[in-house]
Length: 168
Image 1: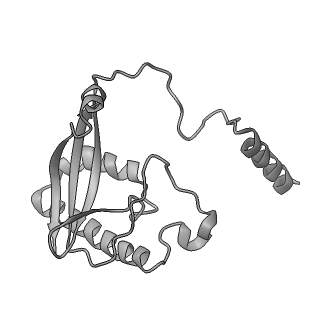
Image 2 (image 1 turned 90 degrees about the horizontal axis):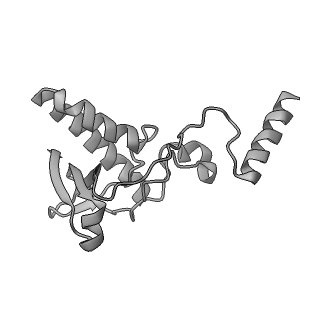
């Protein structure tokens, strides 16, 4: 009976597209958006053999979802010593290279390995780029900053700050 109740309840939520739980995963906070306020996020790029940057699929570090990694880079990475920073970025580089290689060969990563097409992304803010086919020789992490009002006038009004880099 419990299983049927859970299935019926989840079906009702899915059909009505309403969240009936008192504590949703991502609560919405009503407010006005200030187009002059600064915005920032982390961006991750792999380096090809000829030095080009290719975007890293944001789900290569699954089950760690992108927002958690972004917050870690903002809050904890600056407080590490040089050796710890190098070790952390090298680990992320190697994980990204291995999983990007799997994606390039048509294999699944993260929750998709177990659940296949039934796996849902952890967060829908992040767009999955086309999968680069080839080895990655490095990782660059940038903090990008912009203001919506400036970006409305000039799409390229984005400041990129190199936060970390790891080469093989």
